[in-house]
Length: 324
Image 1 (cartoon, one colour):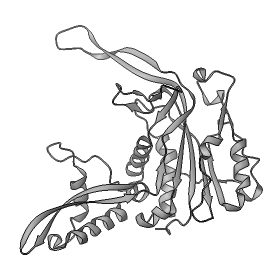
Image 2 (cartoon, rainbow, N blue to C red; image 1 turned 120 degrees about the vertical axis):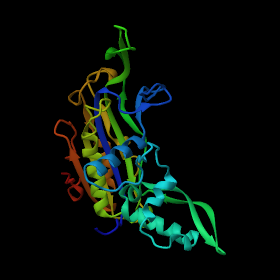
Image 3 (cartoon, helix red, strand yellow; image 1 turned 120 degrees about the horizontal axis):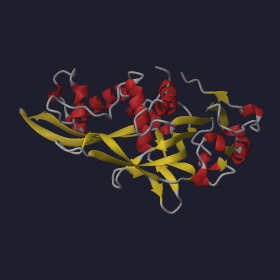
Image 4 (cartoon, one colour; image 1 turned 60 degrees about the vertical axis):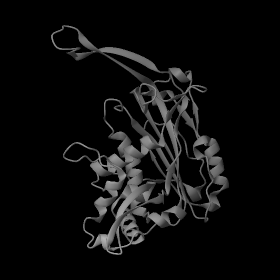
C-alpha cells in the first residue's frame, strides 16, 4: 500500500441523468428529491457513497464494512455483528479487556475495509469481557471520522418532474384479465454537482493512502457510469476535478459554486449536456490567485462537456486523472 496522504484536496464532480430518478425520497413515495423553494434537484451524499462502495466491492473486489449481509434465515446483520466478523481469527478474545478488544476491532476494520478508511464509521459494540472468572457484556462504540466528506449534490439548474403511468406484465390478482398499473416519477434531465473534501488530519486516524484516493476517484467516475439499475440507467459522469494543496491545513472552499451553467434554453427545458455551456471563469480566477498554495490540479472530462480551463496559470495546468 502507498503512503498515507499528506495534504488536503477538494473535489468537484458533475454527472447527469436522463428520464430517471437519481435519488428517490422514501418519505415521499420515492420521488426525486427537489428543493421546493428553488426547483433544484438534490442527491444525498449517502447515495454517492453507496455508489462508490458498491463499485469498489463488486468491480474491484475490495472489502466494504457498510454492506448488507444476511444469514441463513434471511435476517440482516446489524453493525454489532458486522464488527465481530473481524474478530473470528483472534484467539482468547474474551480474556482480553474491552478496550483491547475495541482496539483490535478498530485496527482490523481500518486495515480491511476501504470504505472505513475513506468515509469513517460509527460502530456500536457489545463485547463479552471476563472479570473475576465471570463473563459480562460491555457496550460501547468506535467512532472513525471519515477523511472524505461530500456535501449534498445539487443540480446546476431547475428541474421538472414527470409522472409516468404504465401497465405491468402480470395480472393484478389470480383469475382476472386486468394487468397491474405502474406509476413512477422521473426527471427528464438533471446535471448534478457534488463537492467533496479530503481532510489530511482525519486521514491519520484511518490510514487513508494515496492508493485509496485513486480508488475513490475510480469509484466516483466508473461507479456512476456502471450504476445500471432501472432507476439509474442513463447516468453519465461528466467532470471530475481535484485540487491538491501544499499549504498545511488550507483549502479554498466552495469550488463547486464557481462553475456556472449557461444555456439558451430555460432550465426546465434542458434535455442534454449539449444544451449546456459550463462557465469556469470564476473558478479559474480563484485558483490562479491561490496558485502558490496549490500543489497540482487533476481533471477527468467527458468529451461532450463544453468547459474551458485554458485560462489556468501554467504552474497549475491540470493533469489527466488516470482512471481505468
